[in-house]
Image 1 (cartoon, rainbow, N blue to C red):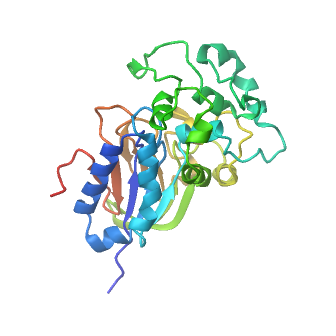
Image 2: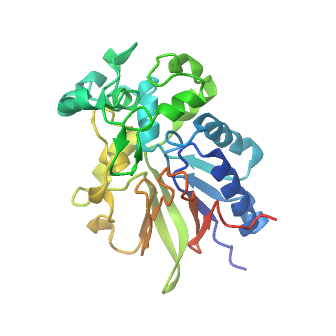
Length: 309
């Protein structure tokens, strides 16, 4: 008898909503056959922190999974928010080209005043995104999102509060437990799987899967991009693969051979187009669901589904 294809679950941006994560996990357990769930590959697509009220509890939940589900495999991608959180905590690797983290400021220094970049303890050796993350933005309302900013351009105020610290305070560096620092340090920027099954109109197809928070840039060599992501190159001020928008929405043309699935979160949308899967229905909004996609079936499960008995 042919071996059943392994179940792969890709979970969209959680953004500090522990109750949504709990409900989604229960719904996944109800929707998937127990033996398939217990051996599934679970890929979290990043953005665990900011916006929602319980970043600390979300990270506690994620850290607990390998012990609770020892036969599952868990992958934790870095989102742009998690990258910036790590940058503030001083957890990012040094740039491999020998440059300083502060060299990442220059490209965007025209925005420093408007975004109120962090200037407190440790800022001199901090990646640009860490300074933006803990900064105090001048504007109070984010017109693009249609909601008030929470402290910084990243809405990091709620993350500080979840650790019992005022927004923008260097006390966060001491308040975040070592286990959380280890989790943030170990996040990957890309995950590649060589044999994942996906349902297509032509039937079940064996594919390569690339998971990256925002996507891959079209027009640039894919292997070069993957190399940069595997190496965690922090000399870059703004890593498009974690924070880009239109430029990383589509599958790069060289992968357009129907043999590679590219799965991401980040975009505040649920978008299933052939082999391009974007799973971020929630976008960090309080009233929108956190969703996951289950492969090979491409079934969408949400925290709001009424599945768990």
